[in-house]
Image (cartoon, rainbow, N blue to C red; front, side, top):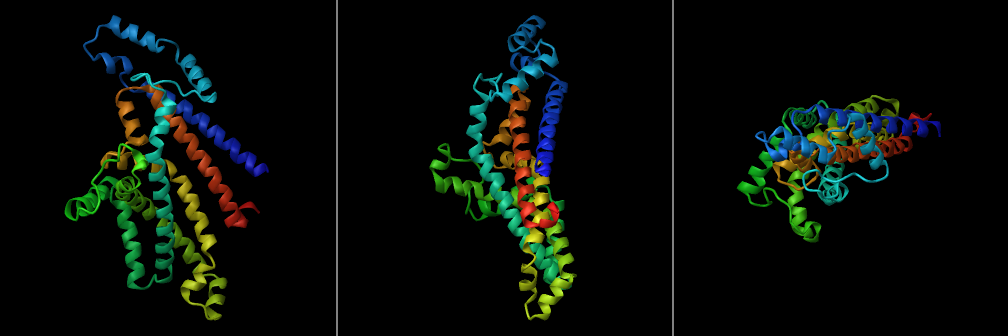
Length: 312
């Protein structure tokens, strides 16, 4: 129980530190919502009046305490630009971002496990070396380049899938929504799996060099069958790295949503930063940071069951 309490305390401290950092960074950026709405030619009096209307003339400490207190009560505030509820706007975008990140992570883990184990068993053969080489290439190629390449092949040349966009009815048009998500999911998962393959291969190589593997081989099992007994041990570090890479994955989601014109949280946040809609941006980032820490706690609990040595 002490381990769970320690992890929970660490997560809460991390979320709190993130709120301070996000709040401070947004105030350091040049310009504010007043200049974004009125333009650079606005008079100082007009700018001052609008800032007072938004409460931006108060001390930073008071602004932070008010925002954090409201967020703890579940009130994420209203957009300074549109006046709409931030919470409702966030939830309206989750039906794009959540499937994108979840499906990409799942596909990346499955691909990494298969490719990593294959390259470990056949490390001295061409297929194993080729798998490792492709993983290295995946690390070097930027996400947006992968996305543009997939668009060129599957949307421009073969016309099998749409180049971007998402149905206005969302998942109500399930077939069209699914087709719209295929290329974005592939783009994000390829970038993530290239990182995970290295860890899956390293853990598989450690098992291949162990007595347990040699005993299984001596008992007549094939290389794949012998390595399959260590799937849980290989999966544990892959999930750990996946949890650590969640923030990077969300950053990649911003790029992917921009490339494929998806109406998700990432593209919305980029627009809101440009508009200096600080209330909406900081509340959106708070939700994302809290989600990352919650998922990490869940994965840590799963890993304790996969690898009992972690909780020993």
